[in-house]
Length: 467
Ligand SMILES: Cc1cc2nc3c(=O)[nH]c(=O)nc-3n(C[C@H](O)[C@H](O)[C@H](O)COP(=O)(O)OP(=O)(O)OC[C@H]3O[C@@H](n4cnc5c(N)ncnc54)[C@H](O)[C@@H]3O)c2cc1C
Image (tube, rainbow, N blue to C red):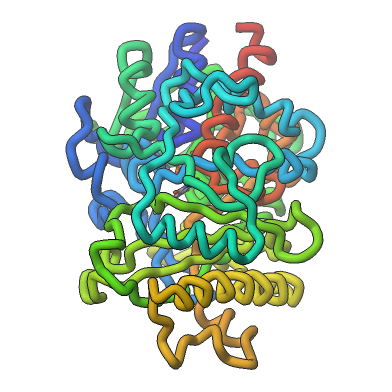
């Protein structure tokens, strides 16, 4: 059987990994393949204008980073490796509960500290570890404890909360994502086409009946050509997948409509001693707690070096960032119908668009401010006198300050665009396997969970196609 996977990111590569010995797999990526061994910058650096899709959030005007490179998001991301709470998957419905995803979460990882636990993996390609704690990480954890938050040694153990080392797939060798960790296993077993843009999925059959995917039309180094397939898997990510569906002639009303992202804010302070701030892209420490009484309604706080991302900031600048992990608001990605950008998406992330989200974010910011104040009481940080979160009228300030946590999901969600086996409605031989299928955002970054979706999605292919 010939399978074409359109998009070489987290979902696409993990699906390729599981399917490669069972079918003839062609993995197609619009961006460049940086090669093996992976060059330094894709392991250690974090801004790649030459490997980016150049999207913008029309609500805020902010640029939205999206990796246009083999490995997708996992080649450019902060490599925070959280899984979230089992309860975060309840809204995903039948076939997509924690217990359904757990085999995938375990299969993809080797947890370097807790691998022997039944809910962890110890033989998967993605190394998940916990970094050393900087003096400021330790001060942040101590301030959190003084505010009543418990210690949490393993944020990826089901049902935990509190403050402790952040699980990450950034190891000494660098970002250990789909590119560095999984592609070496996939390369010898698939046909890889990089710098090759999938223009459209080729469909056969009448618009009135079920249509069948028979291949893709691509534009690559050799020009425009078609590649035949018995099954096409779309894995272009939360923004790329809706665009590919539009270019392929789909006009299902759900396309782009379920988009969600975690709203995220920075609360900037100054460290007493710049040597206490470790300039590394993923923080050592993470706090997870309930916004109010319901522990499942979480916010996340992590501190990091502002200077790392903004070299005009002082070395001692320290951002305590806070995210609302169960937002209700949905954004959208809608189709630009004509003109030079025809079939690209117009993105609105919809951060804090509901009053409930704004009010819960305000509670999360106040709880975070308490932790910052406890650090300031110890003389570890200085809070600016005009800190924006000290205003009495907080909600308008939140709406000005909010940014993306870079976690867009759900733009082609289960029950909106695909069925529970990830088949695009009204089609045969066409599945979507990436973060766009999330029925609802869950309470962690989508890095590891999308890899697990790749694993699980490949399992559906194996069952459906009797591979
Ligand atoms: C800057 C940044 C930081 C992040 N930090 C974290 C973090 O610390 N922790 C966390 O959990 N998550 C993080 N994420 C999110 C996480 O990386 C993504 O959610 C995840 O990569 C999504 O996987 P995906 O397979 O859905 O899409 P992607 O990984 O984006 O993969 C899609 C791939 O398809 C390719 N593609 C798209 N359209 C086409 C086409 N037409 N033809 C061919 N190829 C195409 C793209 O180039 C891309 O390689 C971050 C993301 C970014 C951008």
